[in-house]
Image 1 (cartoon, rainbow, N blue to C red):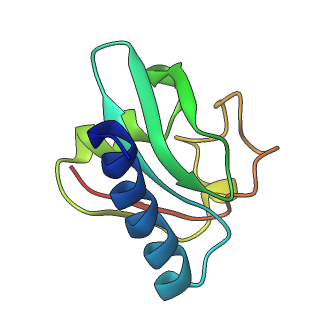
Image 2 (tube, rainbow, N blue to C red; image 1 turned 30 degrees about the vertical axis):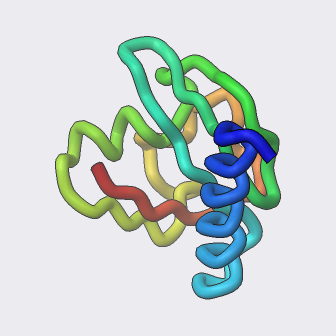
Length: 96
């Protein structure tokens, strides 16, 4: 196993554990740059790169602290996201 594979396996352990501990359908580790969100590890959702503007991350970053949204279907900040409401997410938690 090379170092990149080992790193991905470590990230996968974290997302699997978070999914189990929080009893949620999907978890991810998301890395951001100015225009993109890269999900190197995810459980219950695809990995890959998406436009940052199409993620919950932009709002999380603007809050600057722990963001807890109990029902994103009721939150105006997330209704316009292309993946929403088609995705399995009814709530989100994130931190900077």
